[in-house]
Length: 325
Image (cartoon, rainbow, N blue to C red; front, side, top):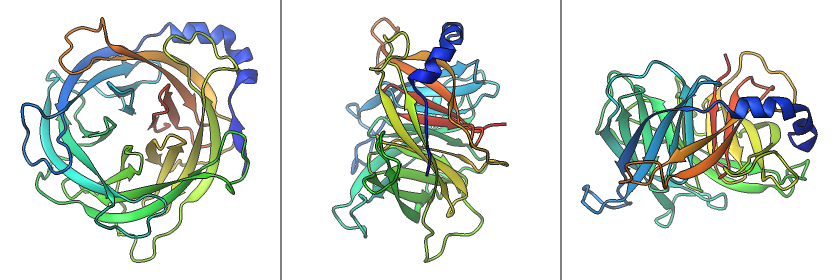
C-alpha cells in the first residue's frame, strides 16, 4: 500500500503561498472552562479539574475549530454562531478501552471519563475527556441525558513508521466504539485517550465485527508555533486512513493515538496530501482572563486528495477532519 509524502520537495513550491496563507489568522469566537470529573467521581466539586477550551473560525477552511489547553483539536464545518456563547452540561460517560493486546474487557481495562456539554454558540455537543482531548458531535433536538452507552464494536488500528511501506512492524492501537444512548451516535475512544464521533449505522454490526480496511497512509509535517518555514527538522507524523465497515466512516489515525472520523467520500481518487494553509491557535488555561500567557499551538491544514476531506494536524500530533464538499 502506497504512503503519500508531504515534505521538503513540496514545500519548495509553496514558498510564495506559504507567507500569504499564514497571514490569515483564525477568528477567536469564545472560550470555555469546562469541568471533567475523574473516573469514579459522582458529583462535581470545587476542586474538580477544569479544561480550558477556545473556539475559533478558520475563515480559510471555513471550519469551526476548538483547541484545548493541551493542544488537542476538534473541527466541524462552520455555520452561523449563536448569541449565547456558554456551554451547558448535558451528560457524562465512563468508557472502557482495551489495549491492542487485550482481547476481552476485564476489571483492569482502562476507563476514560467523558463529559458532554451543549456548546450553545455552535449548536453542537462538545465532548471533553479527563485527558483534555475533545470532539464535536451533533446535538439532537430530542437529546437524552440519562441513557447509558452500549458497546458497538472494537478495532485494532495499525500505524506504519515514517519509513515503512508495509504493516509488518506497524504500531498497534486498541480502539473501542460505543453507541451513545443519549444521542444515538457513535463515540470512538482510543487506548491513548483520544476521542471522535460518527453517525451510527441503521443496524448494529452483530456478532461478527468486520476488520477495518486500510485505504492509504500520509506523512504530514506540523510546524511548532515558533517555527517559520518547513525544514528537515520539522516534525512529521504518520497518519493512516481506514474504512470502518462497521460504521461506514472513514477513520483517520495518527501515530500519537489521535483519531478523527469523516463520512465516506462520494468518489475516491488518488493523490498525495496537498498542503492548504496554516495558523496558530492560542488556548488559555482555566481561570486565565486574557491571552498573555496562553499556550500557542501550530496547526497545518491539508487536503486529502484521496477523499477530498481537510485534515488538520497540530504540533502535538492531534488531528481533526472536516468533510469535503
